Image (tube, rainbow over all chains, first blue to last red; front, side, top):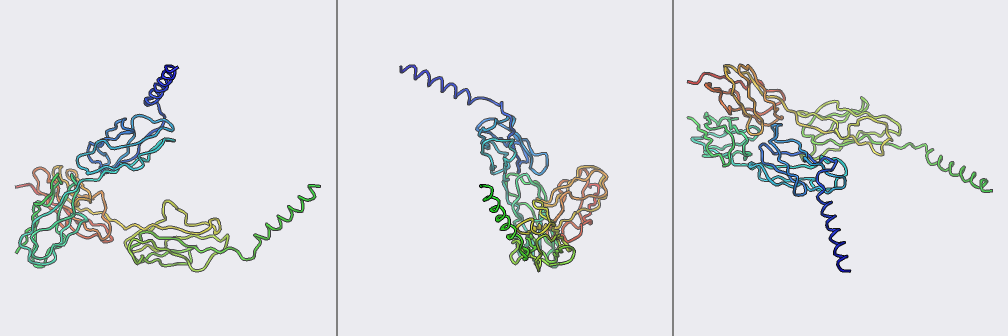
Length: 196
Length: 206
C-alpha cells in the first residue's frame, strides 16, 4: 500500500520536473529597451537563466532595444534581472520586468545610471569680478579672488570642454587642460590663469 | 390581452423619453483646455478663427496653465482651437497623445484641448579653414555632443542643437595630426537665432 503511494508521488514529481524544463519552445518575444549603455558589460537574465549580453549601444547615446534569444510561452511567468553591468555605470534598474506572458512583451526597461566624477580646476591671479566658465550648458560663476572652481560632475567616459563664457573685469584669462575624456577618477587639473 | 397592456405602456415610455430630450434649453459647453510647460509670454489661442485669448505662463514655473474661451457654445456647435501666436522662445503644439483641436460640442462630455510647449533650440556651428587632414573633434561641453569635421571641410554644425537661454562652449577635444586648431567666439548663451560664427582656424603645428 505504502509503496504505491510513493510510486505515484515519484511519478508526479517526475512529471513536474519534466514540464519545468520545457526549454524554449515558446512563441512570444520578450524584450524592451535600455538606456545608459555606452560599453559592453550589461547582462540580463530571465528567470535566472536565458543569459543575454547587451552590446554597446550603436545609437551613440547609450540607448537601444533588446530581445531575449529564447521565446517564452503564453502564460509563462517572466522575471528580468540584471546579472552584469558595464563598468562605467553605478546601477542598472529594471522596470516592468516581471509578469505573465500573454502577448509579445516589449515593455521591459533597463535604465543604467552612469558613475560621475568631479570636474574641478585651479584659478590663478583672478582679481576682477565676472569670470564665468561653461562646460556646454553647465555654467559656473567664479568670484574675484577665487583659487579654484567646480563644474557639475561629468559621467565616466563622457567628454568635457571647459571654456570661458565671460572674462572678468579688466583681465583676460586663459585655460589649460580644458578638454578631455572623464576617466575613473575626478579631474582637477583644469587650470585658469588670468592676467595682468 | 397582454398586447393591449404592452402597447400603451410603450407609448407612455416613448413620450417620456421624448420629453426628456425635447428641452428648449440646449446644453452649453465651454471651450477650454490646459497648456503644459509654458514658460514665456505671448501665447495666443483662437477659436474658429475669431475669439482670441492670451495665455500667460504660470506663477510657479513648471505648473500647467488652464485656459477657457469666454462665452459658451451650444450642443452641436463646432469649435476649432488653434495657436494664433507662439510665445517667445517656445513652440506650442497639440499634445500628440490627444491631437484633437476641433470637433462638435456635445460629442464629448467636456471640451478640453491640451497644448504642449517646448523651448526652441537652434544650431551652432561655423566655418573651418586649413583643415588639411582628418581627426579634428570638437565638443560642446559634456552634454552638447561632439562633431568630427571631415578633411577639407569648410564649415560644420553640431548635430545637437542648443536650447534658448542655455550656454554653449565649443572646445577642441582632439587636434588633427600635425595641425593646431583654435576656435573663435567659442562660447555664448543661446538666443533666438542659430549661431554660425564659432569659426575654427587650423594651422600647421610648429
